[in-house]
Image 1 (cartoon, rainbow, N blue to C red):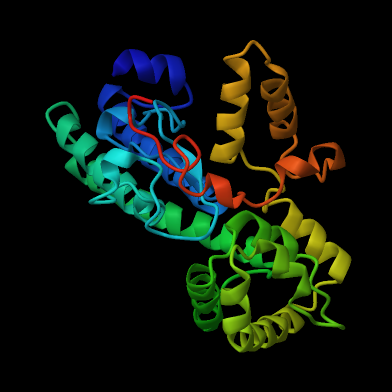
Image 2: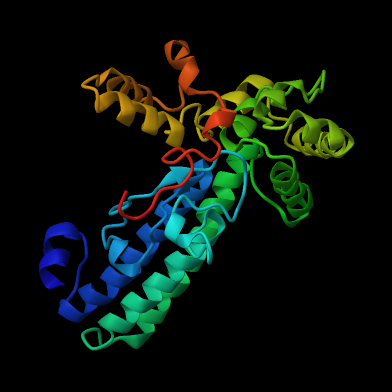
Length: 299
């Protein structure tokens, strides 16, 4: 522990015990920020066992990871988690806190300041709430969240779940909605099932009215709002079916798709028209295909 603090946390000051206490608080802070970013882009780790968490606040030791396609807070890319869904997308913030509580238990014999350990867990909760709240506001193109925003934001996610809407495409295309000529048309490419879109068209229209009313409150110029949204809502994510296709090609000696995906991943917020075919919603053939939807831990 002291070696790790000296090497990786040289900014911490004080005697040994003070550094150890500060160290745990910082781990909690970094973990909260990391998981907030996971939630922002729809990343699902898949195997959040305590031994798969990093004390540096990094993403490590993931096998069946994936990105949400149609929004489902209970989606997991891990076949061994399919029954309990402990590590599903929506559970990740809570599992992060649970894992840190187990780390606190392990550190109790060597960190004398019990209050500092409690502070660490409180820091995690506060940091995650602040970080994800700010990210959520940015994703929807508003300046900051207020209590009054809960209703229309919750409704958006409920409708996305009910009507099978692609998380990445929805938020990216939401930036293109015109306040002066409002239409749901920019969002149509994000729907996986046309019949669900039509069935809930009135619900979506009502939501769009509420959303546009909220945008008018901030009165951010359209170009600025779109630019701000496009810096937090990626155009490209490494969808499972793309990774599997690249793997299949590589097994035949063709690594070209791996190199293309790597190049696209270097600029995930740019349009990159040369890689437009990587930025479409999951094809229907990949919905349940092995490797394209879920994987086992040993895959």
